[in-house]
Amino acid sequence: MNAVKLYCMYVKVFFKSRSEYKVGFFLGILANFYCYLLTFLSFWIVVSRFQSIDGWGFEDMSLLYGLNLFSYAVAGTFVWYNVFQLEKEINSGRLDLYMTRPMSVLGQLICSRFGDTFLGQIIVTLMFLVNALWKNGGQLSWPLVVYLFLVLAGGIALQAGAMILIGALSFWTMKSEKIGSFYYYDLRSLTHYPLTIYPDWVKIMLTFFAPWAFINYYPALVILGKAKTTADYVLGLCSPAVGAGVLAVSIFAFHCGMKRYSSTGN
Image 1 (cartoon, rainbow, N blue to C red):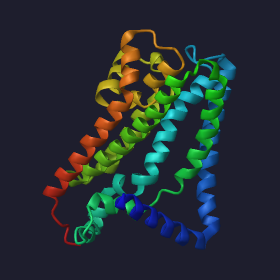
Image 2 (image 1 turned 90 degrees about the vertical axis):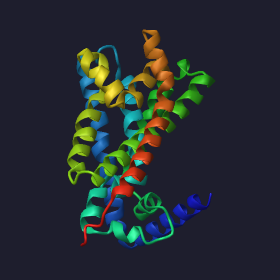
Image 3 (image 1 turned 45 degrees about the horizontal axis):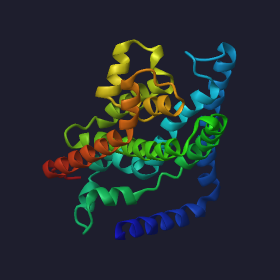
Image 4 (image 1 turned 60 degrees about the horizontal axis):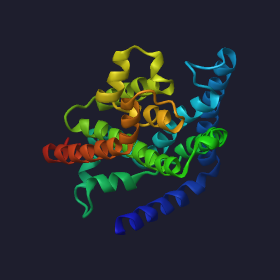
């Protein structure tokens, strides 16, 4: 609880400092809002043109993309600018400063910057997620509602874990951001669409090697009643646990990296 209170204090101070530059603050949020609004509209245009994408209508696509984007944005508010981009902290020598304070380095990194620009993504995603769930409301029972919240929590954990893990690679290689760019902007983008449109090896890769499919694809199959096999259903139910597991592994990897860290001397 003390850690939560401390983080809230940091966020409060952050917003006070950002309020000194209100125009820049709101422009950053609006830029992200309109950027991802256009992405959702592009899905609408494609689906309107072809009726569906392998049987997935616009609301289905909104749920699929929304689960991915919402979990990414929430996780990003905590760890994108500080932990994911740890390479910059190491190269500049600023990480040494964190090691002199009576608080865990990971905790300090999380508190060092609140990802306010992600708020625009969260807002626009919630709009389309609520619309998608409303249109599919007849299929949502209370167990599915509970499952949805667990999926969101698991997705946030998986996204945050991936960001921490990529940041932790900076302890072994100074090119972690390039790896992160491929992992996030290339591999993750494949799950914006139903995995059935790809070859089987892509589905296997996004399930067992880069498990982005557990954030949105398998949960969407369960929520929308599109699970055609027992494996699809089981993998969907396992999604929250996979997210928790990835987060735990990433924190462990971060601490292992800290043990081998040596100052850059800057």
